[in-house]
Image (cartoon, helix red, strand yellow):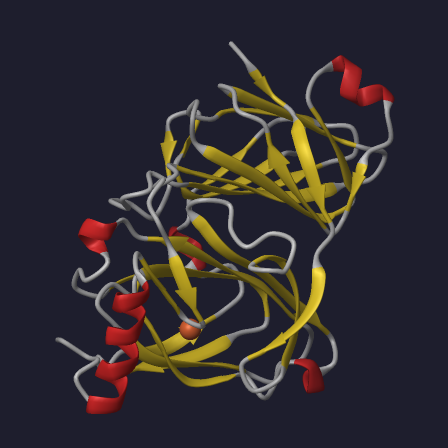
Length: 285
Ligand code: FE2
């Protein structure tokens, strides 16, 4: 059993996207374009409505999956396929854009803060033009594993101790866990060798790896931690309650060309997406 360790710790960068949403970006930055197959990692969290109310007005996607997970507040969405709804606290929307959708994602003014994540997972060449698909998972349908020591794991995708995640049948075979640890608690999770894996620490501080890692300083929040390859990851919380996402997925190892909200294999396919938008042939369904 090879243990995964913290290969690199990434400090999120302040970014602005959509019509002016201020967020923290860890993947799709100047220093980290992608972490195959993850092509974007955004954390939006603010108590100031001016940071998020402008939202993400109607925009296209093609060639990727976009995954939105809300911790607090809510986002109203509607799209070119006729879907609409609200993603609220604890809910997940796993959207396979495939051949193309046009949608808007508008944070709503709430009594508290807006807090959540959006991640993009690239699709392989053979699925880039697949039919768009949604898996909308309300908070109550996301399985939770509760342990005697107070650890709580929400299983969005993948499996923890035989508990299967809510999101299924995704090409990248992803694991997406939200792990909350009491101070000093330990957590261990198998991760398929060869899969890209990362942690995103958003509360408290954690140590990654075995005894040796425990002696050094913890990794504070917010940080994205790129894990080395291996079969298992061990994380333990520092002196305060800590919370992180654990993500893993199968890398595609294909050529990828990104242009705004599109990720395709070739420049020609990007040009085709732009031509389709101009010609009104972007939406296939
Ligand atoms: Fe979007």
